[in-house]
Image 1 (cartoon, rainbow, N blue to C red):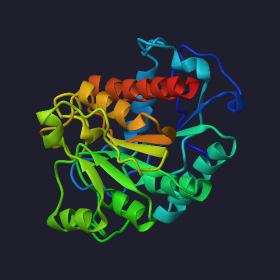
Image 2 (cartoon, rainbow, N blue to C red):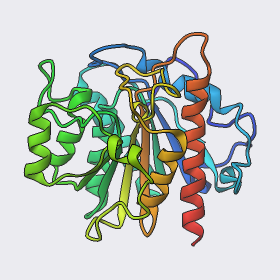
Image 3 (cartoon, one colour):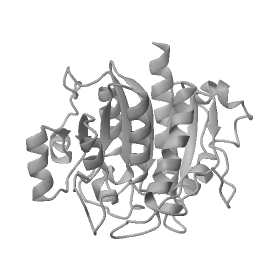
Length: 291
C-alpha cells in the first residue's frame, strides 16, 4: 500500500510512535471516490479527519483511549479498477485482523466498506454489521454498477451477513421491499426522533461480534453538512452515541469505518466532528475491552 501524499498519523500531535503490534487501533485511510451521485469530495475525507485529529484532547471525558495505541497505516492506493482497490482494502484489513487488532477504515465513499466486509467475513464465522446511515444502501445496482456507494449494504446482504440499520430516512420502494423480504432490522430516524433511544436495540439472536459502518450522513446536516448526500431529520450527536452504546452492550466490536465525509473548504467543524466521532468510538471500544 502506497500513497503519493503523506497522511499524518491519527492524533500524532499528542502520541508517540508505537510499534503496530502494540496498538489496539489500526487506522487505514482509503481516499476512494468513484461513484458519488450528488456532491463530491469524499476522496479528501481521510486527510481532513487525520488533520483534524491533531486538535483532539487525549482525554475523551471518561478515559484516555490513546493509551491503547493508535497506528496509522499508509493510505490505500485507490488507483485502478474498482475490484483492484477493494482487494487492497481487503488485504489491509486482513493484515490487521491477523494480528488480532481493530481495523478502522477512513473513507472515502461508502463503497470502501465492501472490502472491509470481505476481509471480516473471511476472518470471522459469525458477525453482524451495524449501519449508521441516512440511506438504506440496499440497491442491487446504481448508475450502472453494483459497486456504487448506494449498493454497499446489498453486497453485505448478498454475503449473508446479518445487518441492522440505524438512522435511515431515505430509501427506494425496492429497498423497502427487500428490507421486508430479508427481515433486515432497523431503527429509523423518525422512530429515534420520537425518542428516547431504546436501551436495547439489537435482537437477542444478533451476532455477538459486530462491525460498525458509520456513514456521516446518518448525522443531521445541521451538525454534518460536509457530505455528498445530506438528508434532513438525522441523528443528533447524543442520539448517535446513545444508539452506539446500546448496540455495543454485550457485543464485541471487531472493526469499524467512518465514511462519506466530503470536506467543505473553510469550514472545519464537520471534519473535527468526524475525528471526534472516531476517537470517542476508540474510547467506547477500549473501555468495553476492559470489562
